[in-house]
Length: 135
Image 1: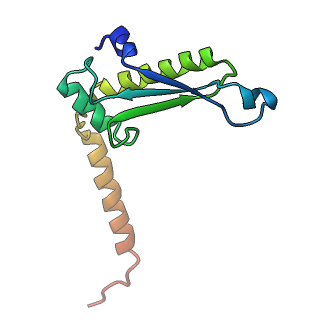
Image 2: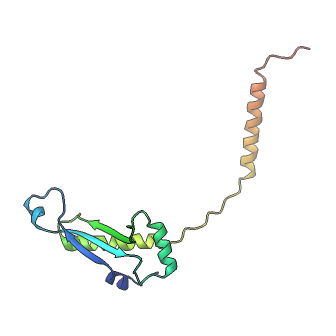
Image 3: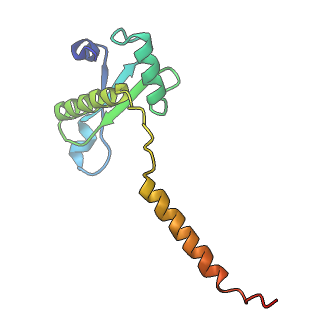
């Protein structure tokens, strides 16, 4: 599909301070990791794959075509980096999978007969509610 090692070399990381509870530790340690990937300048993907990724990830990309992912789940910067890389690779793999074309199934004859039978039964029931025509 694509060369993961070459792709990982194109990534840029930035460590920032994580928000939330944690006391003094949170205030002095940059454990949250941001991953930046510029799709437009990537040499791993060909033009067709870039167009597919641009379509599927359009709501996640910036105007410049940069994908930004964050992870601040762990208190360890190293673990957060591993988690964000896994998310990134999974996101790209899912975006590049081609969707199968749906083949419409034929409605079985028995289902059609049952529907028409019920329709006829309901129409007769409603017809029987009318006053008889005495002429």
